[in-house]
Every structure is written in C-alpha cells, then in structure tokens.
Length: 175
Image (cartoon, rainbow, N blue to C red; front, side, top):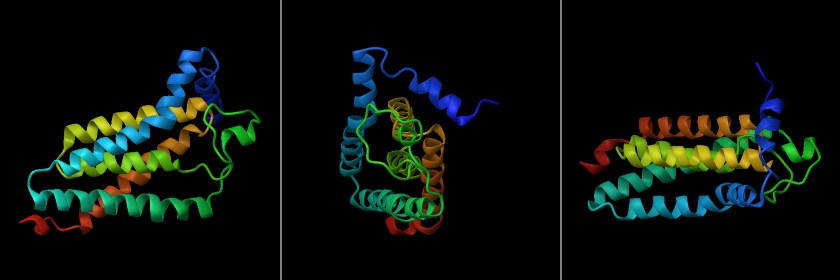
C-alpha cells in the first residue's frame, strides 16, 4: 500500500508540466469554488415552493455551520497538521497561508453542500456537486495546498454533518 506522501508526490508531479495544466489546476482548485457556490445558491433560490426553498436553505446552512463552523475547528485543534508545501519545502501553485490542513476547508464546505443537496431530494444536483468537489479537491492536492487525506477527511466531515442535520431537522417544517 503506497504511503500518503507517495500518492501526494504522484499527483503533485502533474504540477509544473505545462502552463495550461497549471492554469487549469489553479482555476479548479482556487476559482471554481466561487462558481459552485453561486450555482448552489441559484438552485436554492429558484425552488418554486417557498416552504421547500426555506427547508432546503436551512438544511444546507445548518450542514455548513456544523461541518465548517464547528467540526472543522475542533478537528484542527486536536490534530494540527502542516501543509505539504511546509513539510516538503516548495512553493504551491495556489497561494496559501501555512497552518492546519486537515480537513480541507474547501472540501468540507463543498462536500457538505453536495450531501445536503442529495439528502433534500436533489440527487442529480448533489451528485454533480459531489463530482465537482472531488475535482476541486484533487486540484488542491496537485497544486500542493493539501494532502490527499485532507480531502478524504473533508468528504467524511461533510457526510457526517449532512447525516446529523437530516436526523435533527424535521421534515414537518414543510408539511
């Protein structure tokens, strides 16, 4: 079984191969989150039934608060982990400050949104957001801002958060 460092080195080895690929990695890892966020907001906003819209918005918001606002800081407090560029001493493609890397904040945020969409019945949109979050996470690893397990941890935190909100937020709000 390959170590996380060797998996990282294989993926990060794609960086610096061509200007076009580097541009694509930076776009996917650094700028596509803005597009995904706006798309998710648009999908929530265009829900025709106002009760459904309110429920879905609350579901996504509570999932984000739990995942990014509560669980991520707790994990980072108990498991400080330097970023790859700090450990391996290189300049990442994406400008990023030093500090805790696990779980990836971007991965937590967008996997939480993806799972929230999936759990409120928007399965196709949730699947699309999930795939986009995977691509974004891979781009952030290739760029050197994260280790592969940072992205996996982000996926798990997003999933757990959406499950907790699904369990706690009653569907009777929209009846």
